[in-house]
Length: 398
Image (cartoon, rainbow, N blue to C red):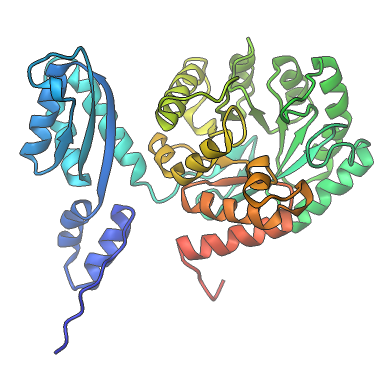
């Protein structure tokens, strides 16, 4: 008999369970062994040396590993980060032990367990957009971009009348759009901000038509509470906020309306010491604000802000490491369509970035994106369906 030795790739415990079942293990064995087959690195920041020492000791006791600052052992540093290395089984056991430890470690244990459980989710609940339920648990959702602006970087000035905007939206729905994202202010680099009154005047005539004529939810892309209020009164189903509830009153407005909201990462300057760590901290803060304001966790969507307050290198790193954000257990939206990073990598103008966009969409979905915001709906719907078939499996019988 010739032996075969080969690697096996698993990304979560359900995939591990299926692989273990294939070798003939019984159901109980699959349940016990699957969490031992998934290896994860988790980073904990800002611990006091005595907290870090306990964490390291407990992780080592379980057969895992933990990297800490060299000055941690003699407490010569005020604080340290800890890089934990272990299986899902290690982490769940560690989380249970931390619940009975001193020095604030029970809270850390609960958070650790939450992040690990979020990473192990195979799918998220379906998205309820004011009564229109979208199958987020079954496939990637496609959000079609509709700008009624004279100066957007890609489609500025093309759909300025309600009739032309409605025709464009209808076509995107026919091509596979699950959501239409309506914007009344360009946010391209170097854009000129417009008053809330101007933005509202641009979107309301179109929005009223869309919510009456389309079978899909309509999202409104705005960071102004005054615009969001008018949009919600006109029937908008989702608010897509590029500043993540920064405008006073926006959080309470969204909570009162009971709609879903996209929280996008953004900042004025593209300067980072720890890119993914700072993106994570930003989302922790904004999610906490949203929950305290009365917004349900089921209404939150995270967007890492491709192209906003980031260099091309930052954008590509975020896309490459997108899966880290799955630790929040919330839907992830990416908006890479035709962005300047694609143009710089491929040295192509806006109207020739289809293939580059397709690559970012496929990689984004593979990294955990559940919603893709795009201009070229037909092509990107095909990319999404093909990527879903690879990642989720494909039923040839439909």
